Length: 86
Image 1 (tube, one colour):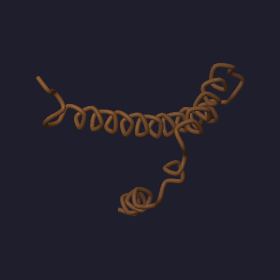
Image 2 (cartoon, rainbow, N blue to C red):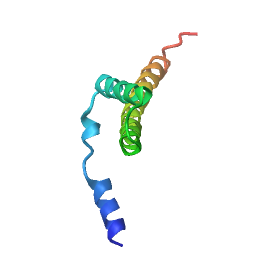
Image 3 (cartoon, rainbow, N blue to C red):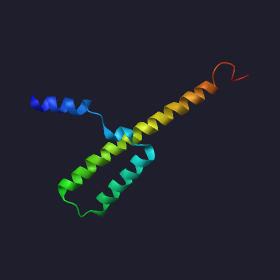
C-alpha cells in the first residue's frame, strides 16, 4: 500500500523535464544515446541512462505532437469556409 501511495505522489509531482524545450531535450537524448553506444558503463548505470532516454524521448514526442496539432489547425483554418473560391 505504501508503494501505491509513493507512485501516486510521484505522478502528482511536477516533472522538471516538462520545462525543457524541444532542442534541449533532443540534445540531451543524443548525449544519452552516445553514452549508451560507447559502453563502458555498469548495468545499473546503463539502466539509468535508458530510463533517462525514455523520459527525454517522451518530452520530444510531446513537442512534436504539439507542433503537428498547430500545423493541422493552421491548415484547417486556411481551408475553412470561403478559402476555396471554387
